Structure formats: C-alpha cells, structure tokens
Amino acid sequence: MGESEGEIMKLRSLLFVPGDSERKFVKARASGADALILDLEDSVAPSEKPRARAMVGAALDERCPRAWSTFVRVNALDSGLALDDLAAIVKPGLDAVMLPKAEGGQDVVRLGHYLDAFEAMAGLPIGAIKISVVATETPRAMFALATYAPAHPRLIALTWGGEDLAAALGATANREPDGAWTFPYQVARAQCLLAASAAETTPIDTVHTDFRDLQGLEADCRRSRRDGFLGRMAIHPDQVATINACYSPSEAEIAAARRIVEAFEAAPGAGALGIDGKMVDIPHLKAARKLLASI
Image 1: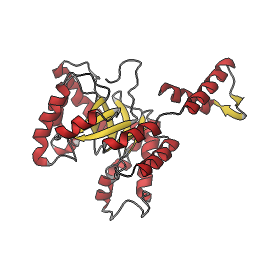
Image 2: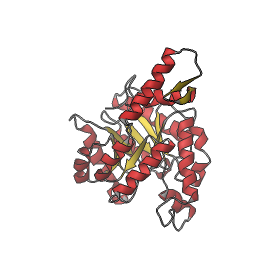
Image 3: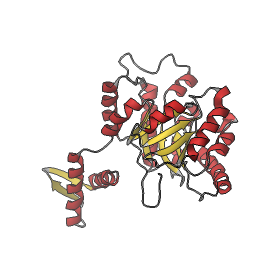
Image 4: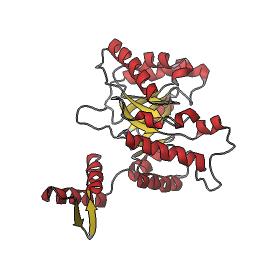
C-alpha cells in the first residue's frame, strides 16, 4: 500500500508498534489501522535498537497482502542512529519514514537526500518513500513550523507531541486536572494544525495516552476533527476503531458535500449560493471537495 499517482494515502489512524515486539506487531496487523508505525525510537531501549532494526527490516520483507501503510519512526537525525535505521529499513514494503524531533523544513530536506541515496541502493524509484514529521518536540521546532511550506515533495503529514516538549521545557505537568492540555501545549497543537494547512499536508493529532479511556478518546477525537485534524496516532489497538469512526465523514456530511459541489457545478461562475437554507460560498466548496476526496 502507499501513494501512487492519483492515490491519497488514507491516514485516519496510525498505530504505534514497538519495533522489538513481534507479539505487538502481530496484534497490530489485525487492528484495522490505516497505518502501522513500527517504532525504532522512544519505545525501544538503547540496548535493543540493533535487534529492533533487524526485526523491523524482516517485517518489511514480508510479502503478505497488507491493508495498511507501513511507517517506521526512526531515531532523530542528530542521534547518531538515523543512518543505521535507514540502512535497515529502506526497501520495498516501506511506505513512509516518521521523523521525530524535527526542527524545520531543512530536516525534511536532509532526510530526503538520505532517502534519495538509500532508494537508489535499494533499486526503488526516487521519491517512493514519503515523510511524516513530529513537528513540535523541541522549543526550537516551535519557531520553525512555517518552514514546512511549501512542502517537500515527500512530505505527507505533520503531527505533534507534548511529552518531549514538556521534558525540554522542564514542565512539571502538561495537562490540567481534567485532562485538558495546559496552554503551551494547546499552542503547539494549534500551530501544528496551522503549519500542516499552510504546507497543504495532512494534520495528524497526537496520542491519547489513557488507552482504556475510549469515551474520553472519542470526545477528544470529535473536538480534534472539528478543529481540522484529519487523523490521529494511537498507542493501543483498542483505540483504532474509535479513531477510524471519528475521522470518517458521516453519510450526512458526505451528502451535504455532494449537494454543495453539485450546486456550484450547476451554476458556474457563482461565488455564493443558497443551499439547504444556508448561504454557501467558495470556502465551503473547497471544504466539500476536500471531504469527498478523502472517502
């Protein structure tokens, strides 16, 4: 699976899988997630990283039919581990690399150059492997979000995270007693959403860490989709069905979008129309077309 010409990679749900856990990978394959993120970074202890690379490389070699896209989260570019990660994973079967702790568009360019070389060595078409970015994990990164636009040809998604940023800031907590993000992390979330929109790439919301709280997850996903996020990362297979449901347009939304598109097609040159008792203009038409393209 992956992006071919005219095909958009579906990214409602992206499930993290520790790269050194065969058991969790087997369970994840049956989760229904749109993408599996095989992780070589935070969920793998330093002593286990070589074994995780080998396991992830072997998983990518499997030729069984897949209903998901396969991502790998590599270690940060300045960790001294990223090139070893790429050497192990750039092969047929890999759809995208997730880059953590990125600090702007120049890191995407750098990773893109690495991928050019590794793709050539693997006999893959240049540009076959896409890039998604965790864009808010350092204070410096927060001031570089505008540099993802215009988007690198490989860039397909921006996401954010609050845990590494909290550690970098020395925060004692990043959530209110009711679970809501405190203000600095609300800013990171909003800025990531705006940066993704500016780069015309997919905005992906961060994980809901309490994997047993499916009711809270659903409420948060609905707020997230309301604001403009198009998908969410997950840390447990039990979260996937809720995420898929929340980020999929309802039949009523699809029908309304079709009415808007059809109305404007029937009135070429119109800037605004009355539809279902409401005034609808060009931004509504753009949103309707975007929704219909996602199904």
